[in-house]
Length: 502
Image (cartoon, rainbow, N blue to C red; front, top):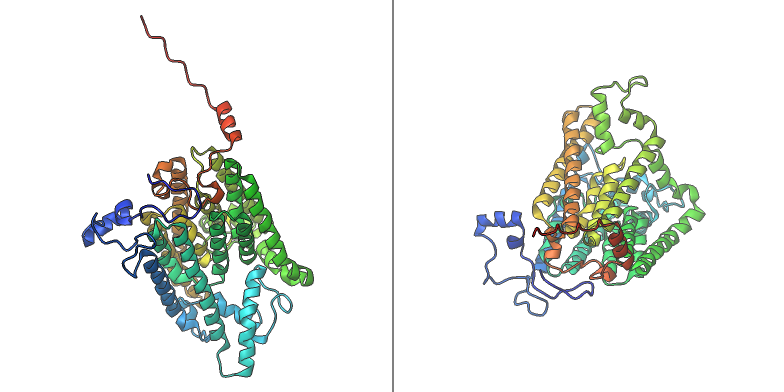
């Protein structure tokens, strides 16, 4: 195993080559001559010794830009906003970014929260206004421009820049494993959903937050994660793993600093809109409270299975059908299951033979939220992409998950088109099967990560780094004395050896 100094992001040491270390890539490489040879001229030499322009990092960044450019082309049929004959579904190019330019009143110059309620957290609303209002003003001055197209392209450029920045963060966190970032750059989910919504605002902020934590800047990490939580709620969940790992490593002060600054940043960004326009600001919470079971979720699958046995009428309802009609109970059950999952992750973090890496716990927590949530939109897969790359950079299971996401994407648009035309494209069971495949592959990734935590010698990242390159103050830190004492008290005493017969 390689060793490294415990100083956060590190670029020293030898680089990982997937054709040697990853079983799936090694097998596929046989089709083109086998794994990289011992005397091959590598493109990922340490910084300062590159003999070629196309280093591994630059190749990965170029691949990310190519994927995002192809995504823009895939969305091109929808960019003019003239969605006739259900083109947004038949070409699979629907995007909330363009639809909400009109639905949220931005095309009329309405200021988010002041003039119109917004269904997203405030930082997303601020981004919508920051890009939408100048486009509206430009359209007033020049009525010949297509405001919807201009708004979409402005957002696509900003979101793509955040996506490329996220790749850059992954490369910075994995200087010895630059090809791990290719998982993100080439992910089919990135190609299909990058600009469906404003998720990359939160993803970029969360990535910067993880980088700040790795550089041992807990206050800055907390601020960035708090801002990410003000764009989409899930980056706040990363503070939980930071806190529990800080507890285990005796670095609680740094962890509490991150949590505190994160909460301060969250409140500071929300406060202006919450005080001045409380009703419009609260639209996000109202929708999430009153929303029934959404497509593709665990609850949707259960409701479909209920429908095979029960009619759904008040006197003949299955449990999932009943939950869909009793939304407060559904909300409480969803929150309770997520809370139990978080407790399980915390117990795992404290009882694992070796302290888990931050990315491993972060993936488990965010995945648990999606698994038990009553809403799982098509683009939510983007939340897990960088965490999956950092937590378990193995190509086989990753590609199986991405295949499931592609199947879900196609089935989802078939469901949308069938709903719009009242003529089913696929039988309902096909969509449920695709939803189950997506759910199942995420669960499998969770199981594999738990196995890596319980058997750290299996962890691909720890085969290259001595501990946790994302850990910051946690990297290389021993367990806190209280944990060692607790384990010594709770562990069973070793049996005395049997006397040797004379």
